[in-house]
Image 1: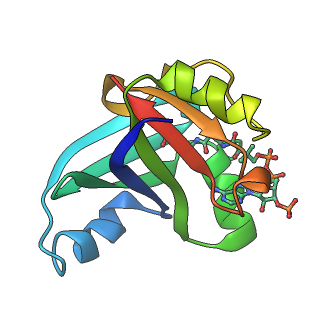
Image 2 (image 1 turned 60 degrees about the horizontal axis):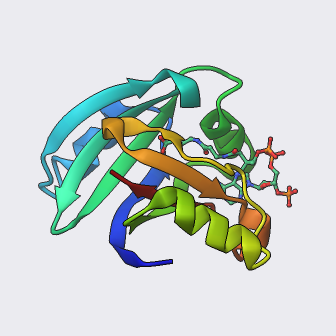
Length: 133
Ligand code: CMX
């Protein structure tokens, strides 16, 4: 699939403001962007460490996948995102290899990146995002 690195780890939280006290105040990571992704019904906050980002996810609606996740499992790691050179061809390859796709085609996510998800039922319980420019 031509993946280069872990682009980000998504963490579902009840409140970005509350969670910042740990990620900024204790870990010392700087929040460099806060962005609402209406399509995904989430507000996001980004922190960078090396090549990898931490993406805090706060639901903006009860219908948000993040609200459903927290209701079921509580706060915690929601997804892992891998950087790909070409998101659409990576999704196609995963589908051809039998992985259940949530997205057959990339859509626009936070930071203007192309994103597509693989279903956790076929990725050993880890919601997996493929993302790239
Ligand atoms: N990680 C692992 N498992 C998950 C999961 C997650 N993040 N979210 C849901 N599941 C599991 C549930 O626990 C449930 O398992 P069981 O059947 O064993 O109980 C199953 O998947 C179905 O869950 P559900 O609550 O009924 O939710 P849906 O089927 O309606 O949706 C999913 C699940 C993954 C298809 C949906 O959340 C989705 O499309 N996610 C991709 C988009 C997304 O998460 N966007 C937010 C982040 C966007 C961003 O980073 O910008």
